[in-house]
Image (cartoon, rainbow, N blue to C red; front, side, top):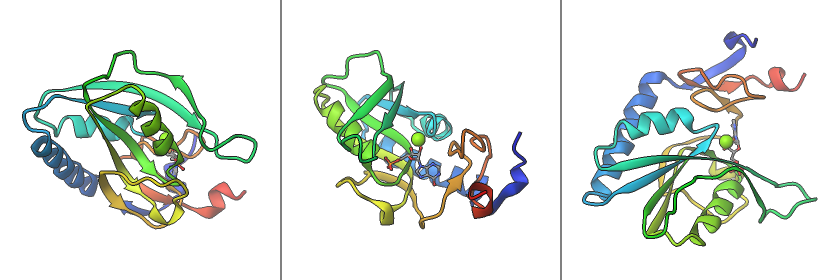
Length: 181
Ligand code: IMP
Ligand code: MG
C-alpha cells in the first residue's frame, strides 16, 4: 500500500474543497431552479466530488454513473470514446450535468458531450472540480469549474495515480520522484 506521506504540496485542503463545492452547489441550484437535473458522475475520479456536490444541491436531482476511457494516442482517433459502463436511463428532454474530477486535454469531456448530444437531452452542462487549461487539446470548456490549476500531476479527492490516493481528503501535487522511478 502506498504511504500518503509520499505526496507533495497540498494545493487544496479539505476545508478549501468543502467551501468551493458548497458554492458550486448553490450556483447550480439557483441556475436550475424550477427544473429537475440529472448529475452524470464520470467514474472513477469524480465519485467524491459528485457525492459532495449532490449534497449541496437543493433542487430535485437524480444521479447516474458512467465509466469511460478516451483514446488519445496516435493509433486511435481522438474522436473515439470507449464506454465501459453506460447510464441506464433515457435522457431525452432531461437537463444533464456531466461531472468530472479534472479537465486536462479535454478529450474525454469533448467526446462525452458529443455522445450525449445524440441522446437529445434538453440541455447539457459540464462541471469539473479542477481545470488545467494549459493542457487543452480539444475545443471544450467546463460550465462550472471548482479551481483552475497549474500543470502538475494532482492526486486526492478522487484523483489517482495508478489507482492510489483517491481517498485523500485533500488535493496534493504528486512528487515527480514518485512516478519517474
Ligand atoms: P482529459 O481527457 O485529458 O481531459 O482527461 C481527463 C482525465 O485524465 C481525468 O478524468 C483524470 O482521470 C485524468 N487526469 C488528468 N490530469 C490528472 C491529474 O493531474 N491527476 C490525476 N488524473 C488526471
Ligand atoms: Mg477520470
